[in-house]
Amino acid sequence: MTTTATDTESFLERVVTDFAGAAGTLTTVLGDRLGLYETMAGAGPLTVDGLAHKTGLDSRLLREWLAAQTVSAYVVHDPDAGTYELPDAHAAVLAQADSPAYLAGAGDIIAGHYLALAEVEQAFRTDGALSYAAQHPCMFSGIERYFRTAYVHQIEPVWFPAVPGLVEGLERGARVADVGCGHGVADLLIGQRWPASTVTGFDAHEPSVAQARAKAIEAGSPGNVSFRVADATGIGPGPYDVVVFFDSLHDLGDPPAALRRAHEVLAEGGILVAVEPWSTDRLEDGIGHPTVRIGYASSTTLCTPGSLAQPGRYGLGTQGGPARRVQLLEEAGFRKAGLAADTGFNLVLAAVK
Image (cartoon, rainbow, N blue to C red):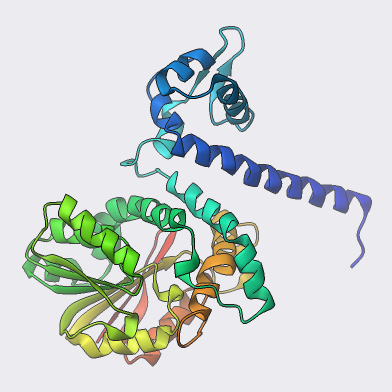
């Protein structure tokens, strides 16, 4: 392949832009952790000293942080007045946890990738494995916050209605198992929205189950939601009417075994739902797509090494498209396996026993 100086310059510009985004993310994480976005949301124009007074933070560093946010076009600077403002539209993404556009939690996931960089490098040089237990706690809190946005705004109005018979079953009262429940946010939402149903969350990561149980206590200890420590092949005893995998199937050491176990514990006619990150069947169709780029980065540094650290070492990967996942459902014995919904951010796969 012949290249020209123009080709090199164009690619150089792209890499510089990517590096600028990666470097800028550090200031975004700082703004989130220090409560700066929350303080600026709805506050109107603020001077550096005014923001320092509100937050108790060092004014000199705040000046640099505000400058970084200005050149990234996250905040709006008025040079004549010497003020900085977080527009309402930006606050919906960075400061308002209940907004359907809230994305700040993703910053902690990216920070976690960098904190584990040395361990990921070592995984490349050895057997590819890096246990989830070795990840920094900010990874798990970031995952909780990031996916909470989708759970709150997608489960009831989008994901579940796309699966035939699911909402009706939950209204009547269904026994639900969540495999890889993490901090249990989705389970508590389902239990609250469909009180006639019972939800049991399973996760092999004990600290996550402890967090889920703590959140259940904070939510008033609902009697229809519980959490257990177990890997994906140890869920049960069942029978369940619904088994869900919320962004967890690709993380497992042996997805085929997990799906076979889900098939075993489901009642006849029971429903399986697997929500996975959006991806394409053909690698070339994802070139340049931002969510695909993020997905493959996470797959390289977190999800695939985590899978390779578990029994089975399957390494499904975060990406790869719906066709491979539908095939796994069919191989596990499920009927009517297919893509129920494509939101542009997630793939909702469903099947029936």
